[in-house]
Length: 204
Image (spheres, rainbow, N blue to C red):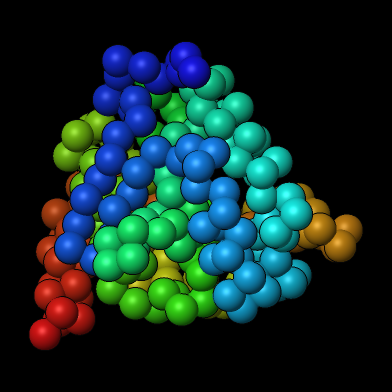
């Protein structure tokens, strides 16, 4: 499949760490992702947008379609110990000219949430964004009601830029306010040091 990002720093790439590998999302990840989303019935959480098992194939196609358009770079989150996909994450809302990206559309199976896998996944994505792509800023967005996600973003060192009120709708039709966070390039060295320290302590 041709991508508008081919031969650019935002081309599909595999990012490897000790506890997680992020590899370009492919259709072959489907069965693992269906199994992963069933761990905790993640699609039942009303304040998130996680695909149910019967919609996983369509969600993979949606993300691959946005990859082809140059507006998303989707990854499968791989647990090295099992070699299986345990979730998804992306660079999205890509502004290649700045450059600037949002890290989002992320979910992990319940068993690996709040583990070193999540921390290292964010460290890999941020390191690639700032140190390889040369981003001026990396953005995160989440629903105001998603306290777990907001706390996780704040623990990364991201700053709250503001809240987009009545920004979109939840799957049930209710209006959603969206919190917008970012890390700018000047803040990245301190954020990187903090995440590296946290990851080191989690491995001891």
